[in-house]
Image (cartoon, each protein chain N blue to C red):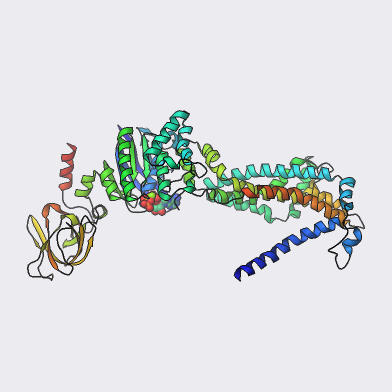
Length: 355
Length: 269
Ligand SMILES: Nc1ncnc2c1ncn2[C@@H]1O[C@H](COP(=O)(O)OP(=O)(O)OP(=O)(O)O)[C@@H](O)[C@H]1O
Ligand SMILES: [Mg+2]
């Protein structure tokens, strides 16, 4: 059964169309991630599903029932707001207990759940504080706690980990995944974090200016981006784009390029070569950024600036010339004018996945 | 140096505000001869004569009770109506509701004397003169525009996500209003009620015209001491002091609830 369905949903604020002609079917127990640049309509999409926004057009279904006019409280959802929206006049404990009280959960059960949840989120010592006495990260965990304590069928999480430090973020990410399995809930998760999107999502929705650019598994999004926007948005550092042939843009990810010592020293004279299997171009190293686990090497080539990810062990020197080579399997070709993918590998691969 | 200047300015300003009150209090304790002495006497033999006159020779207790009934009634009814109006206009905001709020001010732009006669005629034809309800309703009309605007500003200070969170947590819209908006409106409600109380307490024109023997308020009662030939300044001053006291007590008591920042910590800054 398809649990949440948006059918040609649009939401306009005056002249800005925050969400355009949106079609999305979210399966039962799915963990779906919405990504996209700021202002692309992610929060608006969540608010539409929550019932907080009136639609300009379209239909929202939950469990095959049209819910356009169903109040938020009757949708069995919990939500983490991007700006937390904690009740300022209530303690942390009461913030989490509020929704349960509204649902007439027994006192003992409330206490049990709030404390269990506080334990998971490391909030136990803060239960008596008011929101104004909390740090940003603590507030965000309370906001998360207020949602997960509810144990609803649907969770709408709007960047719930954005304000946590790296360590806590990894820890909480795991907790959310665990919770998703344990509660058998459907989760819709908005994030800016590529790693969160790739590791948590069963499927990812890439959005831009209120429209879906691509919907697919992390593997599909990463390996078969449908257009230039998706190709450039997913992946860190982003995919390199080269004006390869007239009208054709060639994309290759920084992790798929190998650097090798160039015969004949510096300079770009050596033209690009391509065979059926291997592409190579030459370039000069301009900057090297060392992140510990890898080096990101920025090179100038006759196709413009490229970035390459290499092993930290490989010795590379600024100012030197190198040959950049990459396998034909790893390239992505796009039509320059429409930005659409030219290869058909995608649909072939999809049919394989669906079997 | 800057601080000194600022403090000096504050002292001068408060002197400007406090002086008339001090003067009023002084007059209320002076003998008739001292009241008019030139130059004014700062040191004088005090008397309670005027207070005695006020309490024995006039129905000041009745006036006080009337003023209290009308001011409290105005504040209660006014707050209820303006809270609903402000909430409605904020959350179902549309071009019409925005104009509505400003159209309320038309009421205030008209000078009172322009409407007092029609209102008097209506009240007299419907046998509503000398009636608490009439005075309360008229005072509510006077207070309403400012109360709505004030309350709307306090409502706008509450992030709308708070209410939305409550609605997702299982509240109806009214439930969210009651459980989340109202508790955060405390300072707004207090500030508005102080204003409304004072406005009604001091209102003269309509109270004068529409009240009668049994509903006269304090400001109207004061005029009893203005006889044909003489004006009893001592008694008027004493009554002025009597008028100030209840409002001052109320304002000072609720002042500590007039804190800002009740919504602090609710949302990401
Ligand atoms: N209440 C509103 N009134 C007018 N425009 C709005 C309103 N809410 C959102 N918008 C506009 O709708 C668009 C989508 O906003 P939305 O908040 O959904 O973006 P987002 O993808 O969540 O962005 P971010 O990543 O910055 O949170 C934006 O252009 C925004 O300016
Ligand atoms: Mg957002």
